[in-house]
Length: 104
Image (tube, rainbow, N blue to C red; front, side, top):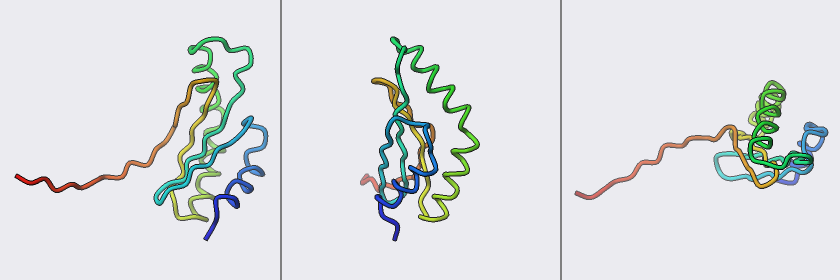
């Protein structure tokens, strides 16, 4: 079984200088990678949103490759997200159907 610490170390080598810091959240179904982008020089929500969008577009292919490797190694889906200042956006999220039984 791969531990959170092992995943974090592996990501450190793979992510290079994309983020100021990285938080890895692991649950039964999914691994969420949340990276912090620099908000230096960005003083409003619109400019931070622009930086997030630029990062998402510029790193798409690399993120997909990293996610595939990690999914193969762990058997869990991978979600990506970023924080820039107070703003946070998760790009992908596993959607798991939930079945409920309601009494009539």
